[in-house]
Length: 607
Image: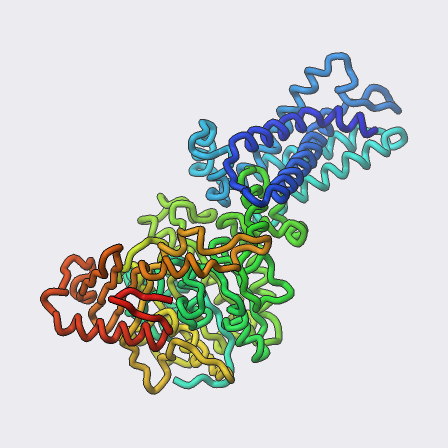
């Protein structure tokens, strides 16, 4: 029986094996130091492709089943002309596999950028056309029709008396087909009165200009968010590296003091985040982040622990990403516990699974807090938001997507009667580019609560370090024994004027600073770090002015800009406002020495 099954499914097996080896041939994954993990993952992928071939080939075999006489059944493959059966089964299997793959492609177009369908491959044009012109529903219908044909033919033609084994064997194929069809990746997407729930929503590259009243006039959830809120118009990220920006928000610890300026976690940092703080206060916490901002692979047991995925996990996820059919196989709620690397696939955000976890948290009896991040890929938004021709612009499509995500959270809060007892914080995750331009470091910040009587605009300078203490104040939480580098807006001494921002690109891009071990980037090369730090660019923002400190090989250069009147920073005022520049330089040096515990020598910062 096993030989007969392999013979009948061989057309599909040949097809998926060919796809696998082609993708392996064109793969450019670096796996230096982790060869075992790489090869074991490739072996697992090969096995998964084989299972997928057996499923699709079995569906084709079921459709091609024929009845020879009353009590004897056979498959066309038993005839002398097997090549005819081979071609028919190959065609049916290809249609089934094509419908499953295209459906996933349409939902998550970014997923295939590093697979066989990369732009250099001619067939990618076909998928681009399908992505722009069709809905996943079309390809779901194709697959359902194929399954229906298989069920009908098996039940009609196979004898109950002599084909019981065959019926049961190919019934498994049918059930597996439904399993693939309904994998979850398809179904997209003041004074506080007592302690409140907290929801943090971080959106990469979201700017204040995206949230003007005119642009969100037809976005009810975004309008509702701004209706009763504090809107911070001059909030700055302390770094231009997105993960550093996010960690500064979650810890309120300066990245240079907390030693995560390269974007990597330092020892003990997870115990000083908002997750740990609120876990100590009886909150249930959760992290729902895309791979770029992932802190852990899966957080079912210890949601408050914040850690980045290890190198081993990243290598495994890259292997999955290099094979275009992998989402069809692994992105399933039943398999995610065993293949959690699938959760690290670039921006592959399963909306049903994600929202079911959020819904479960909101509906619970405990107080809750969770972080939800969204990466900025306006050209490749999840279905159906990627079709920008349906909107005025890419920005409008992106805001529509953001509005629907926030609307879904609002709906869950309303259903569970927790809207009035929840503080929602929406902030931008700025960064990604080197440099110290204020417009790139300025991040929108909106803190919304029913305790606020109306919307108010805060024009004082704040930084990402100030978000955590402000949100905790808004939620009525007074963490004992915790100190922050930021200051709450609700603090009586709320005026925040001096902010130091750091260009982390030099450290982030230098592989020599961190030792690579089996647990990931955790060991620091302090000798290399000391050599890099004197050349790191920094800036001091004070009021409407910004002083850039740019160290070079021979000297340190200073530049002064009016960031309120000269947003593009074209006019250097260092030789015009000499008195102001000197005062800001003194403030900068005092903060470097007192706040960050660094040494200064001729303007260079030394560890």
